[in-house]
Image 1 (spheres, rainbow, N blue to C red):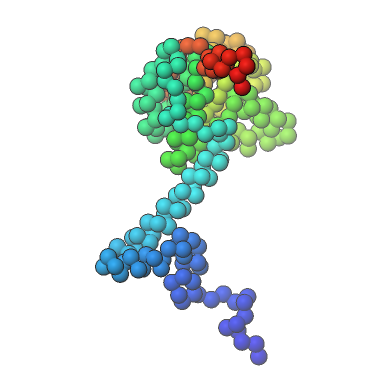
Image 2 (cartoon, one colour):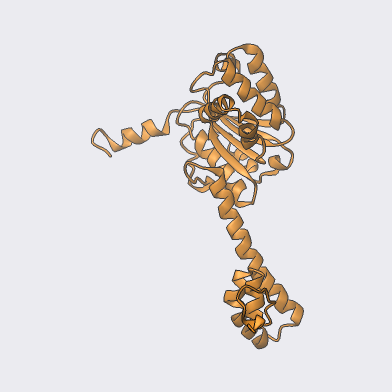
Length: 261
């Protein structure tokens, strides 16, 4: 008769520390438990203190994995931080408001930020920096260019997956919508944009960048009625941050000269 204890298809409960840690998928504990036991002996730690240290390391590793997952899910085109933003370049920028926004308290209140300014003053950098900061704090975040979002929603309507596609933009705690105003939308696109903003109103936060002041949004969103409805919901709980100045990219090219890279 076959010995059931040696049958690899039968489940069994491990009886060693390493085996139990592996069984529970506590990978950090598997790698570190022997050194932690040695440290516990050297430092005369109590059982509770040793267990706290073991679980703390496991939680730290798990949190780091979750943060990397949040960053990947956000689909940032580049990783930007506030530390490498040049506040000296714009002719006018409300620096205290931007630094205050980095505490992310507006997300707790389903508030938002609207960056308004001409091309090249750093709106996208700031939006990405805030989005990245949120993702590193564990906030579910998604970045999209406005035109990409609208094209996705229009395509999903054609293949009858609009509800699923809309949830992509309505469900994250923070949605970063970049480059609103560079291209106008037709009625269908404007309706989709309104539906996204409406679905997030007082439920989720939006960080948005635009090169057009609100008074010009009627030209972006097909008509003034739709534009007003979007602005009303978007701006109600948002901080509007206006930035003025010339393009940083133009300035950079001039500094490099005609033969610059």
